[in-house]
Amino acid sequence: MPNEILIKTIYVADPDLASQTRPETCDILVRDGRIAAVEGAIQAPGAEVIDGEGAIAVAGMVDTHRHVWQTAIRGVAADWSLVDYVREIRVGYATSYTPDHIYLANLVGALEALDTGVTTVCDFSHLMNSPAHAEAAIQGLTDAGIRGVFCYGFYDVPTRDRGFDSHDERLRHADEVARSFRSTAGPLLDFGIALTEFGLVAADLTDAEIDVARRHDALITLHVGTFGSPHGIADLARRGRLGPDMLHVHGNMCDDGELAQVVASGGGVSITPETEMQMGMGFPVTNRLLSVGGMPSFGVDIASNNGGDMLTQMRLALQTARAIDNQTVLDRGVVPDRIRLTVRDALRFGTEGGAKAMRLGGEVGRLRKGARADIALFSTRGLNMMPMGDPVAMLLLQSRPGDADTVLVDGAVVKRDGRLVGVDYDGLRQRSNDAFREIAERVEKTRDDMAGSSSAYSKVMKRATGTAS
Ligand SMILES: [Zn+2]
Image 1: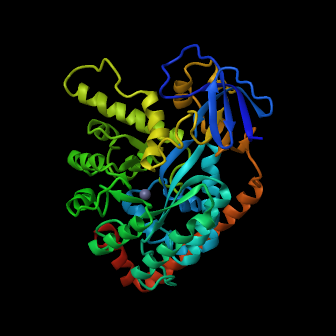
Image 2: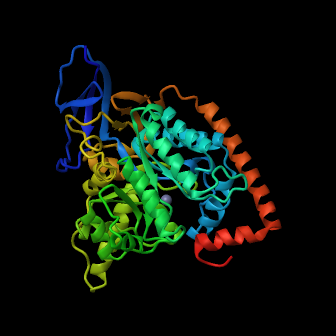
Image 3: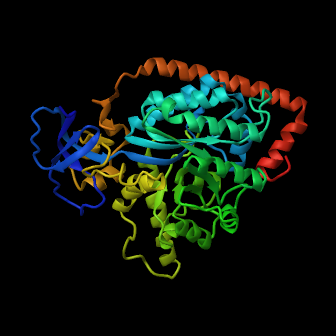
């Protein structure tokens, strides 16, 4: 007997469907982990039935850039620039995590993603302070039950108790993790590589990091067009290293020619509008990427700064791109008479765009027959959803992240009736609060130690920010 779930009476938020001011409901049939049908009044006698009660169904959203480990230190970056961030987190907080801390951060961060209908995440994990940190980070994602790519970072966190003696040792360890990944991390996760920023390490070390990834056909993600690596794309192109296996993040300082080089290479781009605009990285490249033929995708970036839902990022990216477009018209002394980007575009970038950028196109990111059944149902019972209008417009601009009521990953229900299945919320809250306090205490102690021997600290800061400190 096939394992079937019949989701009844839902509106479909599908970017390919035209706007509907008086939408009609339909059903979705899930069979053995895949979407078997999306149509009106499906009959499936043996199936488990989920009554959608007029919820909006959307393909599980895809976050293409998140440092999930920062979930353990929520809110610390709220008023920070990128320079503050580098100093306080990459040189401060990052030195103070134990393996237990990164496990908990990844567990809670991935659960929070699922809770808001984000079913796939690209985890840029540059907190590999020891082999045990890597194991714990992967276990946190696995235990949460999220789909995604765990990207092993080589960034040399300036800890006092060094878990690796050299960059070569990190490379060897990444190779080992990649080889055993499938058997340890489970079927929903893939192994990837998070490159160290150009400028922080020599070019031959970057090449060595890329080589580890390519030996395993792993996704390679990297920060580009931002601090430490303003023209990393041009550098990579010159050295013949660009490829369709690369997911480039931010790119704000890249010129249009570099963005075109990324598009020509087949690589993806992740835009994180909230952190980019706050921290002084520059305007998101959404419009510029589209103008050279690319498809954007979006990321949350850091829970140390902002929440883990993707609706917020899609909204911010859409309205910022519209503002930039409109301003070019206003600058000519003319009032804009049409809006170029639509809510359908933003939804497509946050689902299908993310899937393509992570090399999962066709598998996830669409509510289509044959795709993996990663589905979120957003309740329409709240005052904010009365009256029900066009499902895509309602989802993008009216719904709240907490409206995600039911979530499926690979055909399994991970959230039902507004609660994640099998999750001890009170227990996690207690453990998270304890971990945050422990990390903060360790950061203070590190700061005191470093003040006593400030030369090491200054050296790291100078290298990280390109400025004397
Ligand atoms: Zn990042």
